[in-house]
Length: 158
Image 1 (tube, helix red, strand yellow):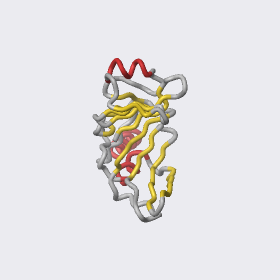
Image 2 (image 1 turned 120 degrees about the vertical axis):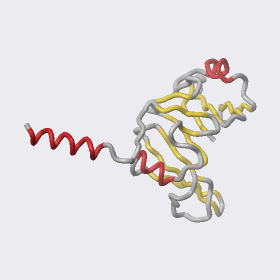
Image 3 (image 1 turned 60 degrees about the vertical axis):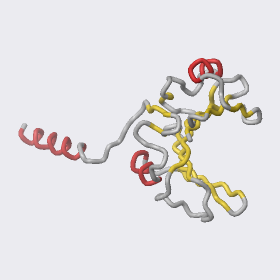
Image 4 (image 1 turned 180 degrees about the horizontal axis):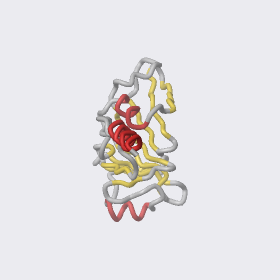
């Protein structure tokens, strides 16, 4: 019995380290980020929280935009475009996109799959509606992207 008590206490001590990992449901806050992971935090902080990402890169002229993608969480974290093709995890995150399996909501309760009408009731009329992207853009720092039936398929915080 003493062996199991010691083992339990060791496991408890190990699991109570100083690394703080937050779990779903996540809350997206316009212009801020996630409740526990803010815009401006580094890519290192993202990997500490979520582990190894799938890294995506897109090139536009001489600049490369890198993103850290977590499909199981339904989250993508973007850096500003840089001249290097190498990812610098010390750079700040400038945009967070929730999609697919995102287990959370915005600060006003909007989730992936909410309707355009629900967004407009809670957030009001957008500052800009992008007809090409079918996207509401709000100056508060949040965008809602809709599918062809006007249900949210992505939420962007910038």
